Image (cartoon, rainbow, N blue to C red):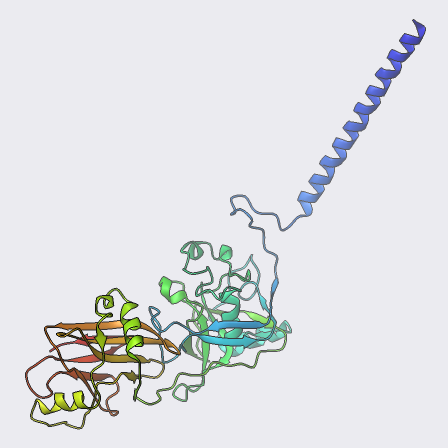
Amino acid sequence: MPFRVSESRTRAENRRRRERAAARTTVLLLALVACSSGSQKNEAPSGAAPGARVLLPNEHVEIPGGEFLSGSRASSSGRRPAVEPREHPVQLGPFEIDRLPYPNDPGSTPLTGIDRQRAARLCAERKQRLCTELEWERACRGPDHSPYATGDSWKKDCEKSPELCRSGFDVLRMSTIREWTASAIGNPALPGHSAVRGAPTDAKAEERRCGLRRAEKNSAGANDLGFRCCQGPPNAVIVTEPSAGETYRKLTLSRARLASLLKSSPQTQDFAAEATFFREPEAAHTVVDRGPGQRKGFRFTVKPLIWKPVPGAEFLVLTARSGKDTSLVAVYHVMGEDDYSLASSFVMKKEPGPIALAYTPDIRPRLHFSNCWGCLGETGKILYREPDRAVILQP
């Protein structure tokens, strides 16, 4: 019995010691948690999106060097070709960019309403510099070369909560305001202008593209015009300003390429299988000879034309026949090298053609098509409409 009693007491004392040790451990853990929560300034605020965190002042994002797609697709809604180059690859070196517009402080609203010179000076006071416009665009597009900071489309929630609007590189508030850049506009018609990136606060979704580019006087200031700063050696690559170039240029396309172009759009795909070009120059002469023969200073062709109505805008215009008695006119945006997207088309049933294009280099914004020049017949105009459209009209 004494042994059993002693054993029972020992077990009880051991149990009490374990309980006291466990209690001390619990108190210590609670103290550590309390200390950690008190010092953790990056913890998500109440009601924040999952994965969100409180931002710290003066955060920077390292953008790696590499190639990205700069510019805008020719068919992008709201594109202004005179200042927005067509989409093309650009190589940049690494740099750092402020996570937020100046003052790069999540507790402050972006500083706006100042001219470009003061914006550059404020960056310099922090031993930084204004970002070049291509650095800004690279940070906006992210590693996937997205057209919008938010991906393939603009998320309207970014307008309500700009600080939650993140690019693929985790740069914030891009395209929620306009921002000065260090890049001057190289167009001689716009002296004293610099490139502004981003969009006004009340802009439509299509105006919030990363490739959107506008010219602004260096002395301008507006309550939606701010800036952000960058660090590291500035990238020397600049935007090549769109130029007018030759108004019209004949192009040779194969019949197979004609068929693939027509097949690429629902509006013309039914005419692809039997499509063929008219014979050059005989068909063009036929169109003129059907009328009084007065060319009126125009040139005539049934070959495809590359048409540049204004600087930066480029279209492919062609006429063709499908089967025995259907003719058509089609206009395509030039997207890249041998890359086209249908802009407008006009189909003439029970019309075997030929259909010729009539043009003169002195008239940039329009050209004509006809099956009988100067007489009654199928005829019309192909017109350029700002900001970046081509339409086909009949009288």
